[in-house]
Length: 118
Image 1 (cartoon, one colour):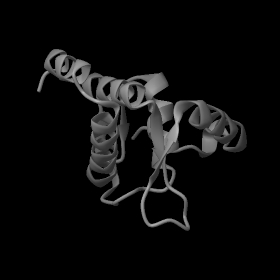
Image 2: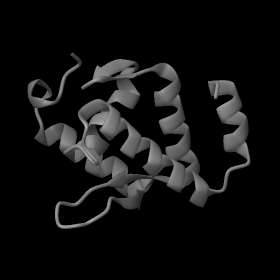
Image 3: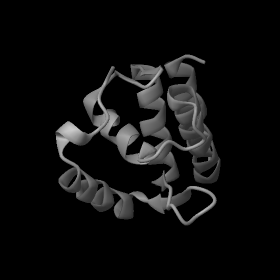
Image 4: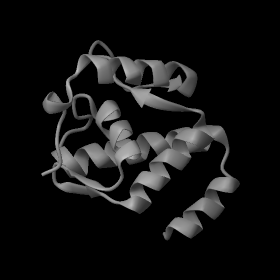
């Protein structure tokens, strides 16, 4: 599906459907990039890439279309998924809660220690 077609579909998508689609896409990114159901710190790494533009993450190129799709799904859903190590599944949290959490991660993890493009 082209980016333009996806954006047309997104306009009619409910927040709940966007939430499900976002989780599915994040799992796909983790599997394709790192052969893991949910790679450690996936939520932070991908969100960081949303602000940086296209880049390689493991074996996957996070291209413009994929990044735009993830950003649009997050906006439509109104949140982002996070994985707590004591949980069985990623949890959805509102963007208002996610953004400060992401900023805390940026402060806690020096740039040189973050996963880099290969």
